[in-house]
Image 1 (cartoon, rainbow over the protein chains, first blue to last red):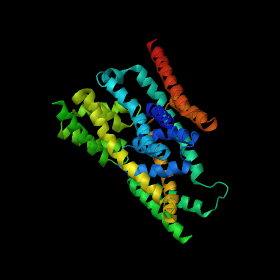
Image 2: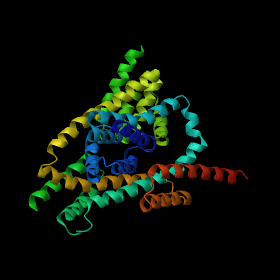
Image 3: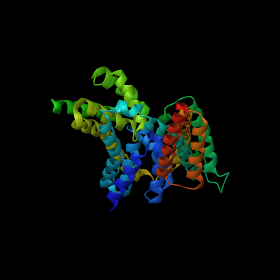
Image 4: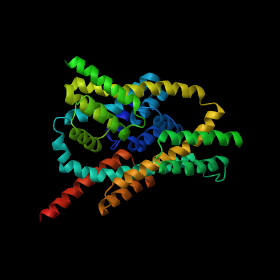
Length: 181
Length: 184
């Protein structure tokens, strides 16, 4: 059953997203592509929407994948799944968090998890780049636009502009290129 | 008493959920103002504790802090009220937006906009990657884990969850080894 499947897959994602936000990307990418729920391009589009709407990225993305896959019921199942692990873990820890924080095992696990999260996001980013750029047709108009956007957005990012502004600028460049080319 | 507090928790976290864009660390100043300064539900130290816990437990910071504050203030019901409050705005907004997107995504101008946006997202992911990379302590162990995890993920397409478990375990084993060596 699709609701149960969505709930279970997003429960796993919620339980293994350390660091929140983009740490979720590798997990969600694999899950949606493996199950053919949405395409990689739709996922990338939706990262932009999640960044431009209020709320945590994780909730936005799971609600979106859920609603696209199986309507409102799907959205409920996916969002409930992604929230449940943190909810239960924090509930358990809220009484004894000092002990948890100072535990050697937790600290040890974090020294291994932090670089792993970085590596996984790097691999996910390469896959996203592969879906954004057309490798077979290197000098296509779309690729030129993408390079221009990466340069401008990279500059805005370097200047610490808000993600919404970066997305807005990228959208304008896309619309402009579409009108000119 | 609890009923009123729970309502209040729900309201405050609804506001936090509705007005933070991007989630995560963007939420910290708002949580600080609402929870520490206005409602005084937590002390400043406790707030920093939450951030530390959120970093070493799975799940988004927003959910972790809502559950933590809720349960501190009013037990299980409080945790439920606060978490529901922080999730509900995004949930509702995304339901509406996904419907709007379905209606407009076939227009050429929207397609063009997203063609540009996708490259912008590459930059956003890249910048998140850089800032996470900066936070890692650069030691031989972390570099090896980073490289190994990358090769497993990119070269062999191994399941991310498996890689995370493996790296977490190796971190535990490594820190035990360091402790033992230091003890001798």
